[in-house]
Image (cartoon, rainbow over all chains, first blue to last red; front, side, top):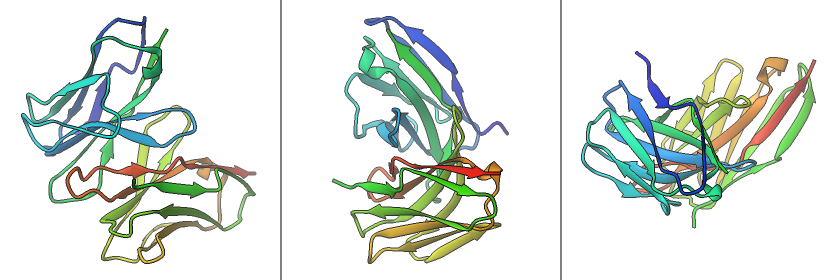
Length: 112
Length: 113
């Protein structure tokens, strides 16, 4: 049981490049979330999903897209990376009937 | 806008001291509140979750309380140890649709040996 895993752990992009971050969970959780954490700040919600095939915007969705084609995976895409997207990205999941969220180890992204 | 505030931003204490970390939130209609620990460059480890129907939760040397009426939660750490040094984040579930968390900016704790 690996819990929540994120791929890759680190990435450096040039402005304008695109990439996809992968989040996978093996706990059969319905809800999945993408957050970003900037220095000295708490985590902010980017997008979330309440089930396979569904996605919705969070607090800071601009510049990102997501997909949830399989229940266990939640993908975060950056179509045209900008320096303002330099951050640490965390994925989380939780079951529908319980409140506790479980977090992945994070992806550190730098956009130059 | 729902907000979660943590004060102080940083705290340094000698080993063995009992300490309290504070968290305040603007929305009294909170479903639950979760405390996390984050080590430098690492992910989040869940410490305690308090549901709205509960007033406190305990795990080992940690005790977290929730007072919805005053919009406050506290994390009490007894007999602090150098290994407790980390950033502590509180987060509230205050949104009926998303069931996502609104985070405070954290308290960075340093326990001096």
